[in-house]
Amino acid sequence: MKFKRYLVIAIIISALLSGCGYELVRDKGIFGGEITTVSVPIFKNPTYEPHVSKYVSQAFTKELMGSGVFKLDRTNTDGYIEGTIKDIRTLPNTLGKTGIVTEKKVYMDLDLILYRKNGTLIRRWTLSDSEVYRADVPNYEEYNKRTAYEKLSERMARRFSAAILVNY
Figure 1 (cartoon, rainbow, N blue to C red):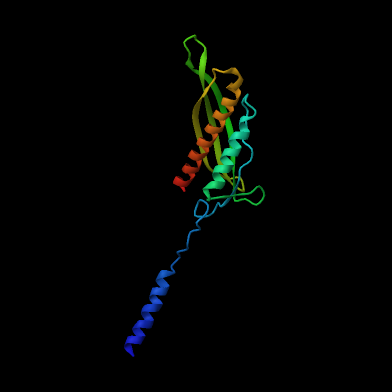
Figure 2: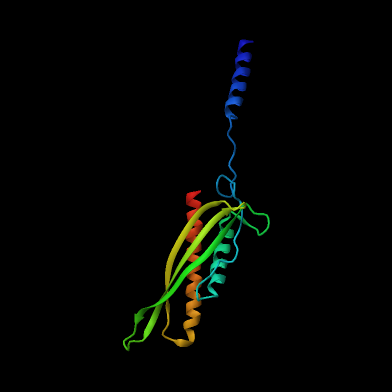
């Protein structure tokens, strides 16, 4: 009889201790699941390269969708990412024997800000990177430059996604 009473008391105490204010964290999102749905509008681009915002926006959207941490939506979101292409510079990188530029290097600086849906700032990131492309054949230079922008955008999006996952 005493054994049953101690067993019941032990079960009640263990049930009370196991439920003391702990809750399971959602497996999606950041801040313990507070932000699970984000919006990624087209990146602002005050530079002289108007088409670059398309590559950057696509790369970031694709990377965030692929991470599985967020759902992307434009209407019902927990937060939104505001991105700005701060600077793009293209400089000669390699000269040929005749003194003609054979490779150029493009540099890109991005500013990213994560906001809650009410407009409260959560975090700001600044990313910079560069990519080399061939410029020795004039007919292919523009294509190579676009490919460099795409590679650069994808690499920066992966770094941003990794930074979010590490920090939260």
